[in-house]
Length: 217
Image 1 (tube, rainbow, N blue to C red):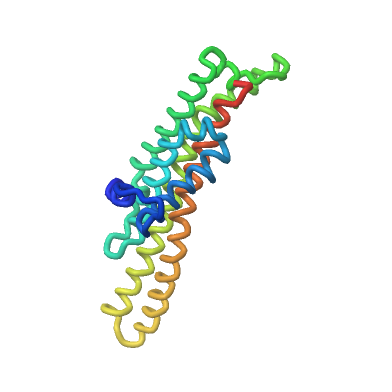
Image 2 (cartoon, rainbow, N blue to C red; image 1 turned 180 degrees about the vertical axis):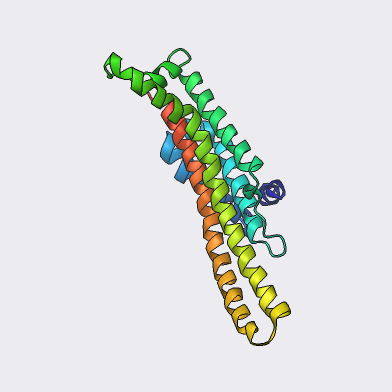
């Protein structure tokens, strides 16, 4: 669906865009300007724009499935999806660092300059864990848990609504109205979470790339 939407929006580009082209250009421009160029600069931003755009739209549309009626299951609430994306991000920033400084990337990452050599006994393991282990783990869990929690809350709200309306009946229906209203309100909140998590995941990927290609590396 993502490929279809982007293809339909860009197959007949016009100087004065229609609605479809405008929406697609707005989304692509947002990733390019507010994430890629802001964090990586124009040169590196354009270089890594395809992977950042892919990650943003994939996370966004996988999140959106969580608020589709009768589906209500975000693809990113299944651990294989955020884990795969985190591994892509992980490989990308390591590739960027090695490409920028083939001989010194790992050295500078694990042995930062300006640190007295005895302190490396403490600093190096910390850098190893934080840079090469914690990053993919936190990327995976942050996205996964936010969407799992939202999914569970919606399930509880609408399951309670069904129970109060169709099983308990009678005066319990009044509680069903309350759970239905809360479920509707939280669905709107989930729209915000959907966009925010796609933005956060893409920004963190760009930040990791930026750190990998920094001059000291």
